[in-house]
Image (cartoon, rainbow, N blue to C red; front, side, top):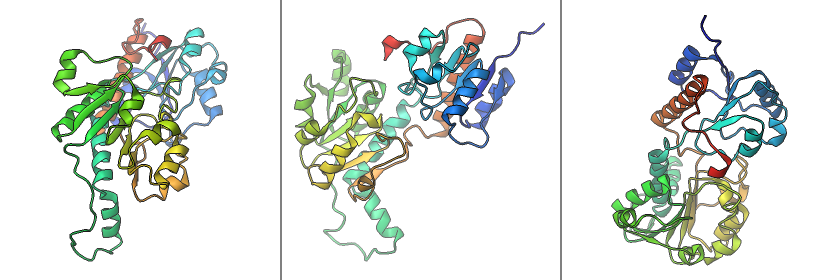
Length: 328
């Protein structure tokens, strides 16, 4: 007699190839229409599922986990970051949590460089002028941006994505500087030609472009606060493709409006999709709707990792990408 299939609830639509494979393996409930679940819907899903497959927009806190009941055994997160899940409380309740690390490294690094170029070369301003039909022809002093070659790039967070950004920036002729919880191995530091700064304050005061590539944890919340933002040069640019909570968004907005920073490129925001309207109005700011990992290849690979985690759990083993509280 075949074993009973796990019941799996997916909170958002995933690539068709991923959903098809999931339906072959598990008793799957898809999300249709593709809208964000309410808190009540999430609670109900957690009560009827063996496995929940959430994403970054689903905030699963202790209160929600308290409503889960005894059926839920695995939260197989679709994404690498798990700061939206109370992993400690889940563990206390006997619920495993897994994620999908290492999949979006190259895609996010590509987007980081795209934002650096967009801000420093004023690409959106030129695009807006062309779309409005306002271009009057070439002029020597029109649309002057800055050359990225030779600029100092400071990378805050030198994990997989930070290192991928460093490799790309090095190819563009940029000087690589970084701040990280742990210093890189000497051979890796030499390969990247990267200069380590133990003091974040000292690094941000000296670089031309700051790239945020660290996760959101209690220790990184508002790591770039008003005081640190004021340490940056007025000609400096800040780019964030990691987590919006790392930057004090109101302080950043004030600094940009006051001319204390030259520009910003943001793919993530402190309050999700609720963005400071004053930030949206600034011509020297490039805002994207969390597109860092938005490639067909990346999203499919994320789904494949979710499937492997669930299948391994169903076979009675520990999911290969299990997240433990001490890892965060």
